[in-house]
Image 1 (cartoon, rainbow, N blue to C red):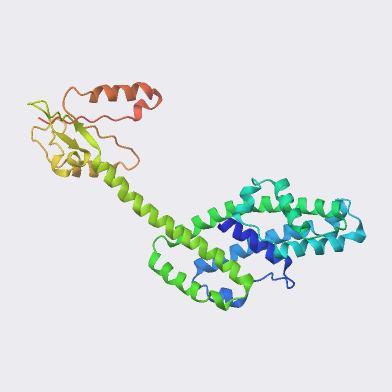
Image 2: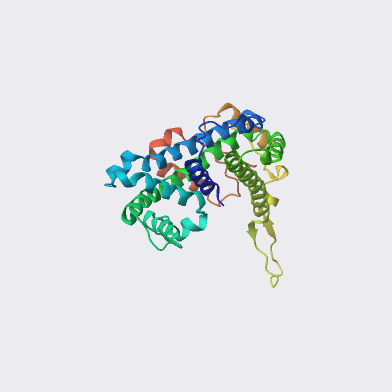
Length: 315
């Protein structure tokens, strides 16, 4: 089950519980071994309580009367809907099959409610109420997806430099999972899923970095190989070109002496002019370096005064 749908399930459970829990149990906060997980737990709990309030508002007498439901039927309808929500399982597949549409979700809820019943009281009123609940659930699902993304970024930014500590905390949270009541377990399960998602994301980033390096090193800079040509050239890869030892020597300004530490010179230039961006163009005479500079200045006329061109002769 996705994190967003897990949040929806927690909201539904919080609505139908006999005992309303507006605050987290001390046990749940007690096992949050640092401010990161504690903040995450509190945010999840606040989001669930906000969603619970929206559904409770739909089931309130005032809202029911605004839907033209007879006052004498309100208590019965609320009880029936809460009973349905107490046992129905709404999963990712449920939302997919409904195409994230409230009318379709309402049909699913109605079919589940109608199952094994020979007679239904207040049918039209129950359908109206289920449609309102469905609209709120679809709305909450969208909000949950945004919330999960937001809190994932917050947690990721906070723990980027403390991954080892986060792994220890993660294990402590898992060890204490079975000690909690079912409501607290649902909240903790959501936090654990977010932490797992962050761990997987970080691993994928690391793997992708190596993938990019491998692709760069395998990329062709020059491919002039022809097995039928006696004077054939060679295959040169980018990894063979951009090495410190391959950087050309240069003559700076009106100097007569050649310099070989181009990388050091460029690094110092970047440090002293950190507000500027640099484009370094290397190549043999005649390949079009000056043409490229001319094209850049011609297409950025409004910034031409900000473009500084330094030329280095290799001999």
